[in-house]
Image (cartoon, rainbow, N blue to C red; front, top):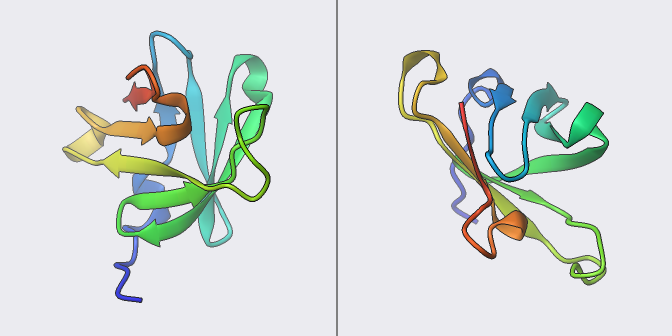
Length: 101
C-alpha cells in the first residue's frame, strides 16, 4: 500500500552483462520495462513496478508454478550506469542471477 514509485524508466534501460546467462537488454514499455534475455532476446520478461527499484514479473518454465511472481531488483550506483546491477530472483538460485552495466 505504501510502495515507492520507480525512478524514470530510462534510468533502468540499456544493455546489461552476466558471465553465466549472457546479455540482457532492458527497454521501457508503457508503465514498465521489458527484459530481453539470451541470444537474440528470445526470452522476454515484462517487469511491472512493485516498490521503488524493485519490479515484479511472472517467470515461466517447469520451475515456475502458474501465476507465480518473481522480482527484479535494480541498484543504480552512478552516472552513466557504471556499477549498476540488476538481480533477477528467479535466475539467482545459485547466486548467478545478477547482471551489471
